[in-house]
Length: 475
Ligand code: ADP
Image 1 (tube, rainbow, N blue to C red):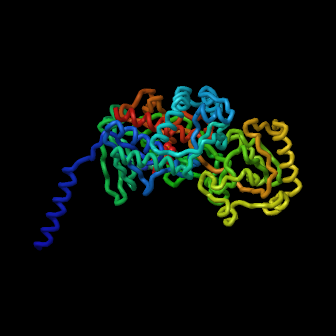
Image 2: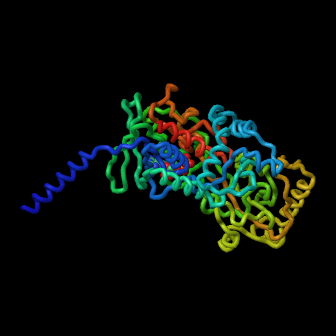
Image 3: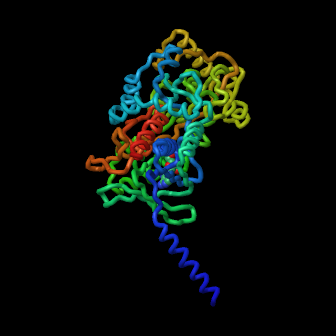
């Protein structure tokens, strides 16, 4: 009996201690420990705010760490050294028109003007890039910077280290389930409710601001099909399993507006088995062509991603191969894959001649030989009269053996729609008013990329708007 009483006492005491502790309190609460979240947390903490990042998965990085990590920024010095003409006006034009003029031009302007300072900020904090400027898949212009570290790991390393240095607390396995607002659709957002791995409910208050950086919804089949039923439930995806979009919905629940939710990007470079972007023998469009299973080119390989995908969808069996030669190999590629491993795993095929390669991948040898010969002729002429590939991607012939083929299929990649924000990264409600205390950045937002995002612009986005969101949330 005495023992029972003691246990009961202990339980009551514990309960009181927890209740007395009340909600946790920080200056800034960041939802999501991917790219935008870690950038925002760093920005806020470096200004002296106390910051917590809540990440529902057991790992940091989200879709950012799985991406190619490449970033678009107009960078006159290295671009001039390679003879590339560029300007932020041209980056604006490519981004805005490349998304069918559906983005908010003010956000696009903020993106392109903020790109180089954002890159510089990361370099100052230890990011390493190669000097060569190139063109990411569907980037439309050579202003893409490639990281030395594989995939998006460089960004997550730099910004988790910077966040830790600035005193940011990070809680993994902690899922935010709702936002706290003074009134259901009015007043300030003052915190979040979350659930930890053990199922404990937490209330965390933000004295200054909440940053929603929970990413997109490409991994939620139901939600993405609701917005774009043409994609089909079996379309593979590059997304990590946590890209399920509840950050958008919980923000809508307290009044936030959304835009462009139907604009979902399919990437032309999906691995046929994994659905992700790893495993290709060649990274950048200057170095390869695409052929269909008949061994024929079918699209301008430097086009917008949606145009490339439409090209693949019009081919027999809706799949293709990336073809390159020895000089076009990226070893390792931007995901850190080594050619020998890709060959050993049968993810890439190699042939000493184009005929041998054709046989291995099951396409007609004569057709592949004719296609490559024709492409080489176009490079020498300096004009792609067949598919209109721009000159700055028409510099390298495919004639030095061995030759390589990487099979690719379309895969769900990026959800361009999401929360409406202004250029201060403040979230806007359905009446067009700022929601006090709520900021957002990264793939959770809409209005930056329109219908089609340029390759390399997502990393620019998380860096530019992540920093703005964190800075303003800390004010
Ligand atoms: P972005 O590129 O916009 O930064 P990422 O996909 O890289 O987007 O990162 C978003 C992060 O947010 C992911 O790590 C994801 O697991 C996390 N996340 C998504 N929803 C929640 C949630 N409800 N609570 C906490 N973290 C979340």
